[in-house]
Length: 243
Ligand SMILES: Nc1ncnc2c1ncn2[C@@H]1O[C@H](COP(=O)(O)OP(=O)(O)OP(=O)(O)O)[C@@H](O)[C@H]1O
Ligand SMILES: [Mg+2]
Image (cartoon, rainbow, N blue to C red):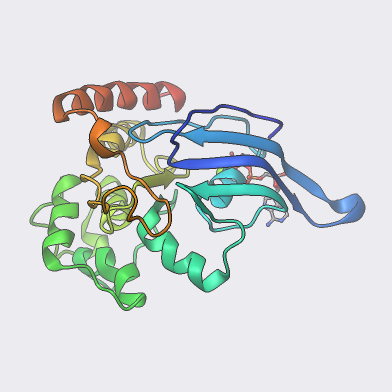
C-alpha cells in the first residue's frame, strides 16, 4: 500500500507515515510504504485493494496487533507504536475490537462464554448484563447458552462481533468479516456492523483525562441521525464488498 493519505482533526485513530516490511534484503516485502490515514469518531470506513496490497497488515498495525517498521499509530492522543507489549495488550482490550474473517470461536464454550473470554483471560470478566446487551445488539438475545456448532455461520460471526463489542471499544476493526459467509448472510453482517456499536463508555470531563483520550463527546450525532448514517454506512460497505 503506497502513500495513502486522508485526514481529519480530532481523530479516533491516526497513522502517520506507516511502513511495514517483512523479511530483509532481497527477500524483503514492503507491505506498507508510507501510509497516513485518520478516522474520525462516528464514521465507517472501508479499506479496499487487491489481494496482497497490505489491507490486513494495515489493520493489524492500526489495531496494535502488529508493529510498523516505521511510522506512528495513535489512538486518540496515545501513541501506540511506542508502548511496551504488556501496556499495549491492556489498552487494546478497551480501545479496539477486532473481527476476523474466521470467527475464531471456542467450540466447547457457550455463546456467552465466548463473548466473555477475552475479558476473563485478562482477569476482568465483563458483567453479565454487558454480555447480554452485546448479544442483543447483534440479534442473538436468548442464544447465550448455545454452542457455536448449534449456530449458522452468520450467527457465529455475530457472536464474534458481540465479543469484539462487549468491552465497548470506541473503534471496531473487521478484516473481511463476510469472507467466510454466503452473500445474503454477509449482507446482514455488513448492515449490522455500523448499527451494533453501543454508546461509548463515559469519559471523564476534559482536563481530567489521564491520557488525552476523547470519545465522540457532545458532538456525537443524535440517535436518529446515527441510525440514518448507519444505514448509509451499511449500503456503502455492501458496495465496497461488491455485494
Ligand atoms: N508474516 C508475513 N511474512 C512475510 N510477508 C508477509 C507476511 N504477512 C504478509 N506478508 C506480505 O505482505 C503483503 C501484504 O499482505 P496482506 O496480508 O496485508 O495483504 P491483503 O491486502 O490483506 O491481502 P488479501 O486481500 O489477500 O487478504 C503481501 O505481499 C504478503 O505476502
Ligand atoms: Mg487480508
